[in-house]
Length: 340
Ligand code: PSU
Ligand code: MN
Image (cartoon, rainbow, N blue to C red; front, side, top):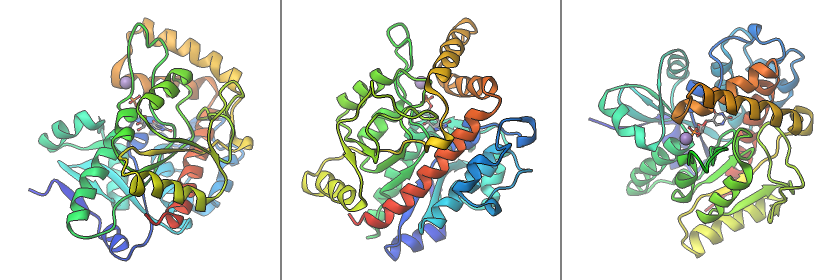
């Protein structure tokens, strides 16, 4: 049985050396609400994030998760690249999925597939949204196949905020597998920073220990997902043009033969960002409620993101969608410049 299924469009693009951007699906199955926007007064009320895309690509009547994933694919296409959305569907790893498959995935009880979960979901013949870790592992499996066929490999990946070291790590050492997956998969990961629900300084240390080059894209401070970076967390490296980014990737992967991924930090645009102090207070409260309610493991990140959305009446969703679209757009731009 074929465990890995490529969408024809992805294969054709890679065969013709056209740019491809990988997208994840845990944000679809577990990160964003499965309701339409009507229930969320703040969300898109003024259509704030729509300028990232043009209204035509956004269907207000659709559930937020589906509309956002569709819009991300659209943003990749607008940027001149082909989206390769990765997911587990009926016991196979799909690299590139159809709009019908995306819609189906958005409405079912899918597994949240980190790397450790892939085999079990495949064995069960089940469906799953892949996290950053799960997606990178799938891309790496796909790259082995592509290399054997003499085709170009997947190098670009756009997500929202990466997982990292959770707050209260000293008591509960919850560190997302995202970090380890990035450290062993030579892909450029475009992200709006670590999710604000995390312990940011600790997450930075973990990235450091994992030998992952961290680059600010036209920003000086480590971005905080739905909030801009603070000058308490300055970055050591910043790049402003795609040519230098591309040459850095070449040096790291080709000349130095390193296998780590590279993290490209794309700060959320000013007009979409939430106030960092306000979010900080909400997250602190949500973390202690999570602890009281015994929420941990895979359920923790979705729980905290939902709490944040509720406490901001949907404003954090606006911001989350905006940054996802911005990251998809930048990844598409970068994929054109990146000729590794
Ligand atoms: N980015 C978002 N929203 C999300 C996620 C990323 O804007 O929901 C998902 C990603 O799939 C990421 C996962 O890999 O959350 C992290 O989960 P955990 O902390 O359980 O590893
Ligand atoms: Mn975890």
